[in-house]
Image (cartoon, rainbow, N blue to C red; front, side, top):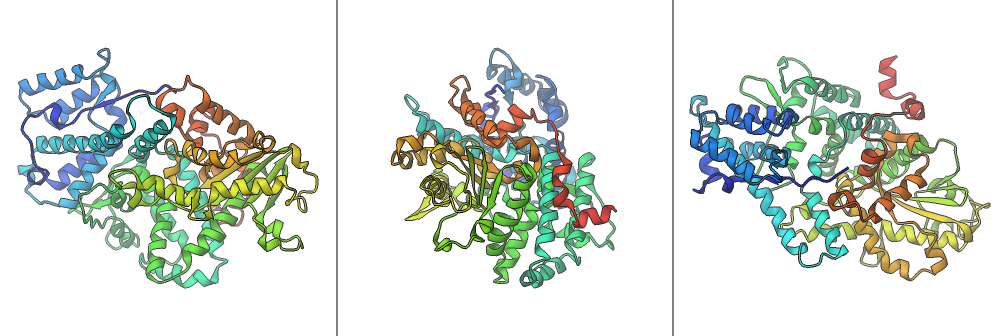
Length: 555
C-alpha cells in the first residue's frame, strides 16, 4: 500500500466573503439536501471514477447554475492544488464532511419551501465543514509536526490524524456484516443462560414491540438488505417494525459541536414527511446488528440500575466470546488454557495468582491474551487539544494510578511464567526457552486506528528495561488485536506468531512511510496479508453456529 496525500479544499479556496452556518441553513430545504447528501455518501466511489469526475459532478449536478466565471475559477483552484497536475489528489467530497453536513442539518432542522432551496448554500455549508475538519487537524500538526520529528511525536501525530479519519476507515461490508451477525448469535445464546438479565432484556425488547432478540435482528437485517441497492425505503404503518424504525430515526442533536457523528451513528435512518426512510449510512446500519444494539441496551440497562455491563464484560466478552473466537482460530491445536480452566487446578493460593484470560503454547511460543471491553471515551476523543485521548487510553490499557492494566498485566504474566509460577498447569514448558507473544484483545474500533499499537509499546519501554536481558530478548512487542479479526479470519490466523512478527517488522521497515508505518494489526492483515479478499472458513465456526437462533431458522 502506498500512502497518498490528499488536498481537501474548503470554503476559503473558492469564496472571499465569509458566511454564517445559521444563515446558510435558512436557504436549504432539509429533505432535498438530506436525500442529495445520502446519495453522495452511498455513491461516493462514482465521484472518484477519474480525475475529472468530481469536478464534473459538482459543476453539473450540484451547482449547475453557478456563473461561468465561478466555474472557470473552480477548475483553476483544483489545478493549483494538484501535485504534478494530478487532479485525483485534490478533493472536496469526502465521507466525514458528507455525514457532518447531514448532522448539522439535522441539528438545525430549518423548514423552508422546496422551491426556495439554494443548492449553492448547501455547497458552501459543505465547504465550511471541510474547513472545520482541517482546523481540527491543524491543532495537533502544529503541536507535533515541528523541527526534526522524533519517533514519539510521530506516533502521536499519526494517532491524532487517525482519530480524525478512523470513522471512514471502516471494515469491508462483508466482514462487518459477518462478525456482527456472529456476535449477535453468541450474545443471544449467552444471555438466555442469564436469568438475572431476563427482565432487563424483556423490557428493552418491549420498547420495539418485539418479544425476542431474533425478531429485533430481522428488523435490522431488513434495513441492511434494502441498503445494499437503495438509499431509502417505505413501510406500512401497521407493520410491526414501524416502532423500531421510528426509534432509530429520532434525531435529538443538542449541539453543533463535533461529536464524532455519534448521534447519526446511533440513529442511521431519517423519516421523511412522506413516510419514507432515508438510510443515512450503510455502515452505521450494519453496526446496529450487534454493536449498536449492545450500546443501546447498555444505556437502557443503566437507566434501570442493572448490572448488565459488568456481567457482559466479564462473562460474555472476556470468557464466552473470547473462548469461541480463540477456538475458531486454533481449534484443538496447541496447549490451551483459559483462566477458568487454570483455576480448576487445586493449587494453594490459586485465587491470588495473576492469570491471563487465555494461555496458548505452540512449542516454545507462548501467546498470552488479555481481553478488554474498555472503550476510549467519546469525551476524551472530543477534546480539542487531543490530550485526554492519550490519558484515557493509558489509564485503561497501561496503568491507572497503582493499578496495572492490560499491557502491564501481560508483562506480569510473562514474569510469573518465566519464574515457573504457571508450571502447575503447563508442566511441559521449558521456562528459560519460551518466547512470549503478549496480546491485547479489544472490542473498541478506535484502537484499530493509527499508532495505538505503537503507543502502548512506547509505554512499556521503561518496564522492559527493568526485566532481565535474557528474558527481555524473548518478549515480542505487544500486539493489539480486535476480536473481530479472530471471528472473521479464524483458521487463517493459526500461524499467529508469523503474522505478528511480520506486522512489527512492517513498522521497523523505514521504507514504509507516513500512515503505512503506523497502521494497526487489523489493517495490516487485511491490506497486506489478505488483500481485502473475503475468505471465511465456515467449518471453524460450526461450534458457534450450532443450536443458534439463526441456524434454527435456516433449517
